Length: 207
Image 1 (cartoon, rainbow, N blue to C red):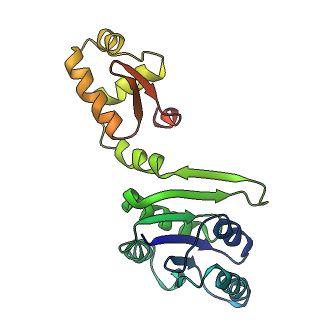
Image 2 (image 1 turned 180 degrees about the vertical axis):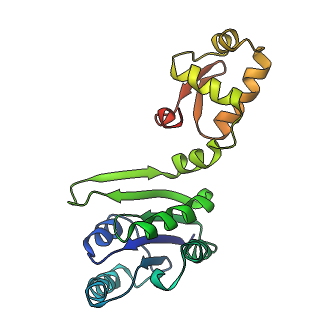
Image 3 (image 1 turned 90 degrees about the vertical axis):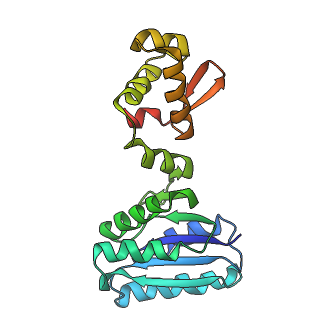
């Protein structure tokens, strides 16, 4: 199963190297680097990165110079590079803000393939990982009905069983169960038992 490693690149190769060397990159995988205008400073960092990547088994490498594209062309180009892979892991720790945003939007469009998105702190002391589960839930959130959003509020307040939700929202249990199943399918909540609902840790983001 071929994997794609996506990197937004500024000029400092350290972010990309930390990302790649902490993951299992194989020779059949692909590395996609999205950068702005390749001037002397960017080229130096890029050359250092490409030399280091050789030690990973010489995976396929593609560089997109987004400066030559529009914002929407960049989204389209990045998305197209994700078509023939099974899993995508991304580092959005370097590069210009508009390139980071364009790449993130492309990742949303192929959310079923996204395993994780890494964002490192500028001082390289830690960072954040957005799991694919959260990315898929985020994309689905905008299609929720007003009742489903009310259910999420009630669950966040502690009403975590069907009976309490039914009473609080004045809806029959069958209706509540149907919407609960949809929220579970959308990865926003999980069910511990048939009648007990447990919120995902990121539920508060959607409220």
